Length: 289
View 1 (tube, helix red, strand yellow):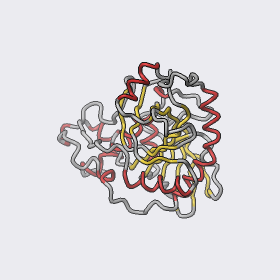
View 2 (cartoon, rainbow, N blue to C red):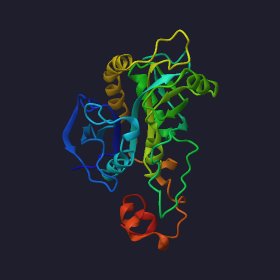
View 3 (tube, rainbow, N blue to C red):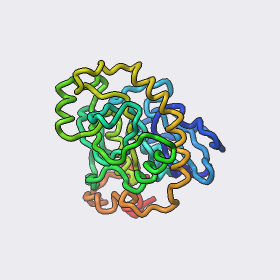
View 4 (cartoon, one colour):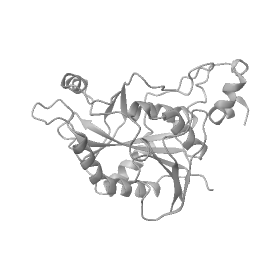
């Protein structure tokens, strides 16, 4: 099976794209357990691509319980070098209307109960994360969204909240006062783990509502969100197809070498079991396979 250089993390129906060939379903084993669900791989023209449903088929896994480490590790094991993450979000700006898309460039972490690193014990690594989304991949995705006819905005700050409940009005007003643009539940630790795995990551945030800051706004409901996501499904597929044909074969961004100067633990002090567990990520820096 040819490597899938591009990964897409989102809903379960995204792989139903015209022109997708060589379709297969795989479920890689990882040291962190199974991924959210089986991964659908295929080819769009010359591009190998892998689709992973973040919440599993039928949307059965809540945001806090998503196996983020297993998901990123599984995609890495398939050869993925770039990930396009797609998720729903609430808006803090009038101009970011329900149905609009945002290609975010910054993150604020308000999660509390998630393992957010591969490097949790017996090895210390500190990646640069000032710019959490790959600027090169984000530019390609933005151009593809424009070409697809989307109402898309480039650049903005995404607040990652714990969930699963939506924000209180006080919380919503607080985040709005910070200058944040949107709020969602799944960009972290996904983006951070992708950086630790030296995978480029870009986010398509799909605005479903105005969160809770508008006094006149109705309460956010699952029905409202699902209806807007259904309308965006066809658009998302078109963006993926257009982006896949424009992503360059080679990478010249910092994401590709994020761990090069990040590991501060002496190789001899890293237990053999951890070296084996993280070999896919750190082996090349330790002189091992």
